[in-house]
Length: 253
Image (cartoon, rainbow, N blue to C red; front, top):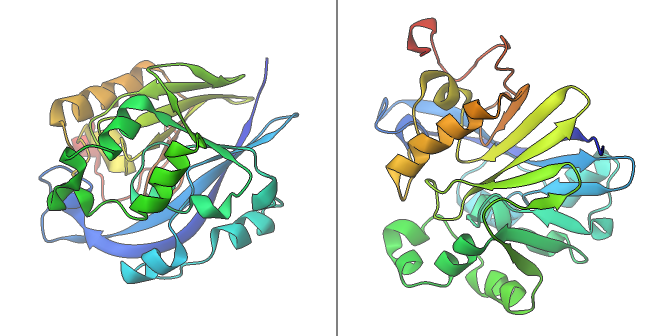
């Protein structure tokens, strides 16, 4: 059995409207969110989940305390140009657009996400605002460096991809075997701890029903650790770990 450690790497933070992350909840109330990627280590290889945001795009979107992804990886003992596999939760600007930092990697995204990226639906301004570096990502797709996976394959020994949609049509999570039990990296399917605890879907959705079902799917996995997309605390322990981002005991269902 292949087991991994999961190391979150924070790239930056900013203040954002709560309702962008908690569906129709507390509009106008600002919360602090974090941007990060994850390093998975087994005895045989290092795998990265998501690319983090490109530096210039992060600054344009007012992220503070921002740093280069390759610098953050180097501090964690990982050379970005030696990474061979990057798993993408989805293709939004802060999760996939920094692919150039991994010149020797092959990227894996859901087929439904790749198809959506190339569709006219994605081009609508209200949707396209969450994407960037379109030509570069399109080139990687055409070159076969962003490869399509479909539904729920094992993308590496001990790592299961789970397509859930909701946030984007092809949003996927990764269920990862660790020595402490099952860890789940949710991407923006579960952006904050409060989403999970209070059963509130993400505020940025293409299908709210899929977003609600995705929360149920995470719970059904019975993970020992949930790595949410943007909470300032990188890991939630469903068995009683501290919950941040403004959730209250009364909200737990």
